[in-house]
Amino acid sequence: MNLPRKFGVGLLATVLSFSVVGLVWSHITLITVYNRGTIKGWLRHSGAYDKIADIVLDSSRKEQGGSSPLTAVPDLQKVAADSFSPAYLQENAEYILNSLYDWLEGKADKLEFSIDLTTAKAELADGVAKYVTEQAAGLPVCTSKSTDSFEVINSGCLPPGMTAAQAGALAREDILTNPEFLPDSSFSSDSIKLKDGDRETGLNDNQNLARVRTVYQKAQTIPPFLTLMALLSAAGVVFISLSRRRGLRKVGFVLVTSGVLIGLSYLAATRGVSLIQQKLSEQTGGTESARELGGSIIGLVGSDIRGLLGLYALGFLLTGVALIVACHFIKQDSKPEPKNESVKTDTPEKPEEVKEPKEDTKEPPEVQL
Image 1 (cartoon, rainbow, N blue to C red):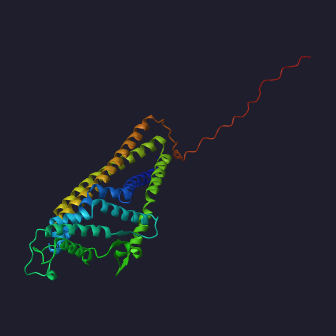
Image 2: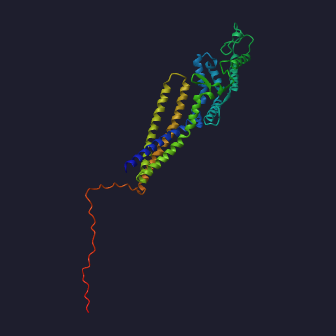
Image 3: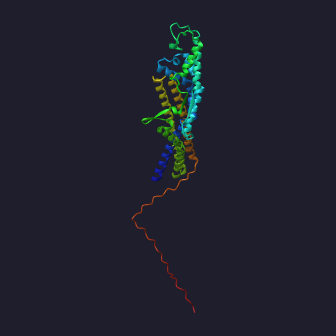
C-alpha cells in the first residue's frame, strides 16, 4: 500500500472513530436531558412529588427558627402537605415542563404558563381551621387576654366569649390574608425574573434564555450529521483500501476500539455518579429531604446513562468482531498496486541484427540443344 493510500485510510478511520463516539454521546443527551418524557420519569420515580412539600416546610422552619405554626406544629405540617398533594404537584410540574419544551422545540413562540393557587390555599386554610377548632374545643377561658393580642394557634386559652368555631374561622382568615404566605393567587411565567447582565428581565425577554433555545434546536441536528459522517468514512475506508476485505477488517477494528472507549465511559460514569452521591450526602447545607431527593435523582440519571452506554459498547464491540470474522470468508479481491519502474542501466541495448536475405547460389540448369 503506497503512502497516500495509507494516509487516507488512517484519516478516514480516525474520523469514523470520533463520529461513532460523538454519535453515542449526542444521542444519549437527546433521549435523556433533551427529552421531556425522561425528565418526567426521573421526577416521578425519585419520589420528588412526595418530598417537595416536606422540603419546603423544612426549609421554612430553618429560616424562621420554628416561629411559624405551619412549620413548627407536626399536625399542621401534615395539613400543609395534604393541601399540596403529590398529584397536585405532579400535574402542575408536568404542565410547566410541557410549556418549557414546547417553547424550546419551537412549537410555542413564548414560554407561558400559569398555575392557580387559590384552591390549594383554600384547602390549606380549611385544614388549619379544622385543626384549630378541634384544639380550641378543650381550651379554658382566658382571664387576662383580649382578642386583640390573641394568637389563634399558639394560645393555651380562649378569650372570653369566643367559641372554638370562631377560633377556627380566625385561623382560616389568617391563612387567606397573610401577605407572607402565598401572597399571589397564581404562579405564572410573568412572575419569574432572571438576571440578564446588569438588569433583571422576564423569561421571554432574557437573552441568555434565548441562546439556550437556539442551542437546544441546533443540537437536534448533531446525531444525523454524525451518523452520515460515520457511514461516509466507513465507506471511504473500504473503498480506498487495497482490497475490500482489508477495508472491512479495518472498519471492524475501529468499531471494536470505539466500543472499548464507550465501555470505559461506562466505568467513568459509574464512578462519577457514586462520587457525586457521596459528596451530596456529606453536605451540611439544606435539608435532609432535599439531599435525599438530589441523590435519588442523580442515581436515576446515572442509571439511564450507564444503561445506554453499556448497550452501545456491546453493540459496537459485537459489530466490529462480526466484521473481522466475516472478512475471513470474503474472497480476496486485491486491487493492482502500481508497479515501480525498473531502474535503467547505462549499458546500451544490443541492436537487433538485421538478417540479409541469402543469395541463391544454385546455378541454373543447363539447357541441352
